[in-house]
Image (tube, rainbow, N blue to C red; front, side, top):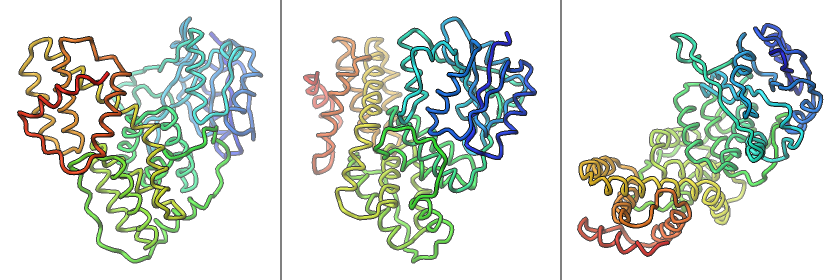
Length: 431
């Protein structure tokens, strides 16, 4: 089974030798260790390493990894005849678990390579899947210590301000590329709960990364930029005027563009006044409400305004357009589809108790999107006798377009409970 080569990627980090030492201690030693040094960006380094492999499999090891003794053996045992990539999570001080160490089938690189895109690894996985090669995550229970479950080593970089900002702005860009709103919500909440002293910088960078326009591989040696220098001055050496901290309240009418724009202006105001303490307090309010979609949109707008050099109104519009088409549309479409499906399923079963439970749970929340969830739950009930809508993403996309138009309307949403059902039923003409 000793048919694994280790490719160690390094751009001059002091921890490279530590990573190599962890490879030498493996219960399944690699047949060869190949170091790829000072090649950037990431996709070029990995492609170069893959071209040197003579074994059936190779493992990608970054210089900031420390692999558990059985890592290679565990990943190799997880490889199957139809699997192209096996991924193992790593333990990380700031995020808890991260992806990770990867075992590749070398043959997959005969027809494909990592590309110069924001998320080259996921793009590669999508491409080899078309050839029948799956990507799987390895699992492992490690005794009573749940922190070590399903992990195969440590990700232990030096979390400086520069490294933290640059790493997480790229992570935000990757979430945008994958249109993964739920993923970025999870990551923000994980960072919030970590207690790490760099967690705020990581959250701000993650939120700002969502607004990256360029879809290119940005994983290269990190360098100071005006944004990093500004953030250090603002958070660490701040001494500006402190105004009263605004109170975040979820809007009764869920209007994402308005929420983004208002908080963009607020972020620009915090920057202009150098009000770091008030800014951190306000961010703290948003982080307590991450289950509310409007709080996350507010965070994106706030960060965009904080980092903006000029204060022209179209900057806010451009930023909102980015998250609208790269995050919100896919997530809200999935969210609409989910509640349509739940309403339809309970109606078919005649499960009145289940429907009442869902409505009561949604009614008890204070989230700005709970009324919309109730509306589509009811819509699902009314479509129960028609064609299955549970998997119709095109139909849900049509609802999204309607919902955007509806949310842009003025006034308040004053629909009486007995009128709501008639109103929702009238929406059945939406394709």
